[in-house]
Length: 328
Image 1 (cartoon, rainbow, N blue to C red):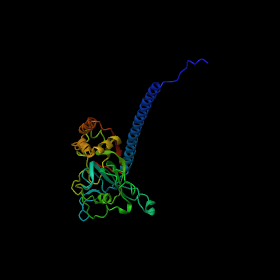
Image 2: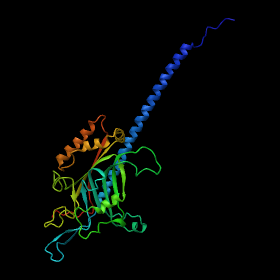
Image 3: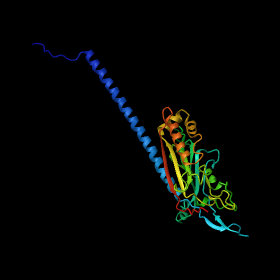
Image 4: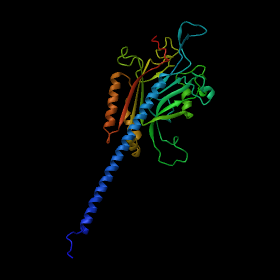
């Protein structure tokens, strides 16, 4: 019988085809992995900033509920000459309010809130009982946050911390003559571990006491350094305007960085240095023009890094509902 003219692949052709197929598979795997990495990073960024935004809104809501229960009282109960504002509570914000062992950046804010936060169900059911509350930014690893026996690598991050003091532990009434600089009513709660993180990768918190823009366009009539202390010089005559009062408005700014940027900076042991350098000299003087310059400088510093640090800046104004503001 005649031999058919059909023939199979030669060995060289088969090997060539196999090599080409292998290259295609490698390219497809690499592309898939790159796409997966991009998707994972994008999801991580979105989740980070969504969590930050939710924590920011929760913080604004809590601040809006702060109270001082300010009242008018005699300046001297034994020999009264005039009335002046009085309160047994305290509203304080600024830098350097916490023990030096806690690595913080920019502002902290502490106040009293009538939310009946208690471990005792009977107290929790009584509406309006007072608790010590507050927010600050802290740099720490996650040793205290991880489950028992977990042996994974430590994650050092800047975190927005919320102090949630319990009603039964409120110490603000323990002092007969409270000092403006006695912060034990909240530092004791922080030291007792009553704080918990509400968002990671928050590097700055700036709270700015203000009047309405129409009354104070430059923003420095109430504070020139983003600070407030409702007990400061409260026994002076006449009293300063902040004595036993909360600011009528609080302009709050929070800065978050992306998780991928934070992870990269931790791996290179540069997280703290990078953040402190980026914030160096900023948010110390509170005027409208300086605030804008400080925000622009911070953005430039974060963008100039190689690679740039991903960030988001959140800003909003809080009206404190329980405030009984008086300009006199």
